[in-house]
Length: 548
Image 1: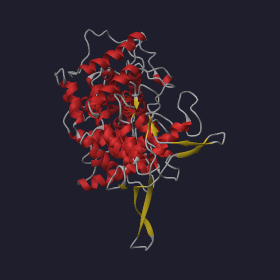
Image 2: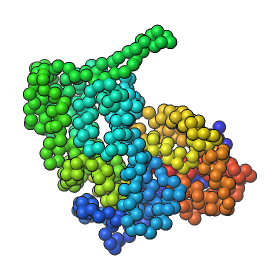
Image 3: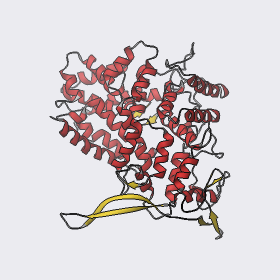
């Protein structure tokens, strides 16, 4: 059990919560901006993005919030690009930097950081195969494929084409794990069809599997036309003999091509049988069995100036960075669900195609935009910009985002060095890290990599944060921990309080927070316990566990 000075700790954590909540709610009205905002990036297309978003503010009579402080922004961009908060030293260095282009330069630096590759590998592994790895699917194989793709900054269209056409051993060709994850049941590629159109085309045609869509022109036959592209494959599960027990155990799985020929037959609600040929965007593919339909499908989805594959990834990436996409949800685009900024969405898709589906360039456009650089604080003149209440997003301030489990775990590591606490070598530290991560993920686990994989305040999640083993080690004063290093440094309590805030919240405390913290330390008979209480309060504050 953790031991805290209960009364003092409660007083302090309430003060921190009040402060952090205030930053997410109404603040002072934004000051009028005297000059156009710029991160220092010289790209005319960023100006176009800003102009489109600004027009939305004018049309809806809202005034945007002010530009985020360096402290707020540097934390946000680290979480979004590399999946963890910045170190205290990084924040200090960035705040002191007087270069007018420092934001743009930091974006480029983070895009080249190895942690960028790991972050987006985590994001897309969860989207493609789920957080709980399905049986006979290799998570390592999936991650290896994605790591190599993001490390080389491969064009997004090529990545998608590899995923939908994959064949072979699930570790030798890691891309097949996407298909294997959708082929858990003998459902005639129904799940593969639904997942592929949702993830890569941004449309949810699964509801037309049994009937025509009630709100747009999608018909039942369209689902089965798409489905017919995925009928020429099957999964093969291989087993081997365990030399210790002599029993048959799982070995590996693979996707192999089959000789499916002709159209697909499906039944209408009336009981009438219908036929569907492989057709995409009015282009019919020869149903002869010698034609490799998935390869034809991979070619058709990238045709045109702004194909759905481009629009879908722009919408998804905008939603990832901004908190909300141009449509809600990001994977349900169509006439029944119009985009908040249709011209901007279309233009960004067109430009992405011209840039050969460069995902780093897409991230660079978004992170350098004015909307991404605004504070999360609301003003009186943009209170209506509240998508969480069902309003159309205007992007006049940054929307608060939940952290994913991976972001929260890695941020705890950065803030505290908890995985190093008491460890004498790298191997032991990494072994302990893996053990903690398994326990940590249990509190966040869901069947698929959707928004419910984020920290959203469930009881198991809250208990994990407050009383979990990772948090215990985080606030320990054992050798190697941040708190141990801090207490060994010279300086008074006020200086150490400032460093603790910087390490956890990426900012210095204000006067009220400093006063509350000093009272906590002064009123305790055990100075070490008081510092641990303070650290525990910071790590469990709203400001730490949310991305704003």
